Amino acid sequence: MVSRGKFLNDAVGYAPLAAAWAYIGFTYLVYLFGPISWPHANIGTETALMAAIVGGLGVGYVFGMRRPVAAVPFASWRRFFWVGALAGIVLLFPASFIYTGKWPWDAYDAFVCPGKAYAEMLHVAQT
Image 1 (cartoon, helix red, strand yellow):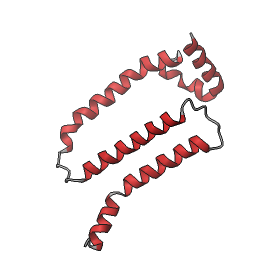
Image 2: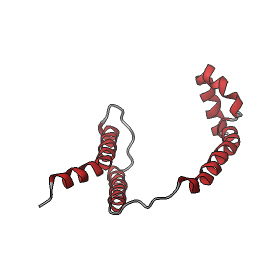
Image 3: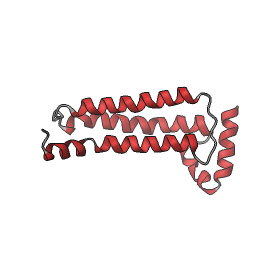
């Protein structure tokens, strides 16, 4: 027989998975039956894909919960953090110019008149 403490530990351990499934399920139902009529090319394929994604999330979570996490010092990950942060800063410049036709320091114009900025971005995307 499973003790009450073990059951509560397991329930708490799987609470994040249950919360994620509830959120994903709710948003998918709103997507399918909500107030905005989104175009659906093939409901069956979309639903099968969502089921596979949610199922994979569950399988990965359950396998991850089976054994304790190996202690890894954070210091070994600092290099990855800094490389990612620097890559994000470097890629900001070409990405903003390619997608919007403006440099990052022109972002103030988008805050002042977002409609104009969006229209200019669409013009850049169409050319």
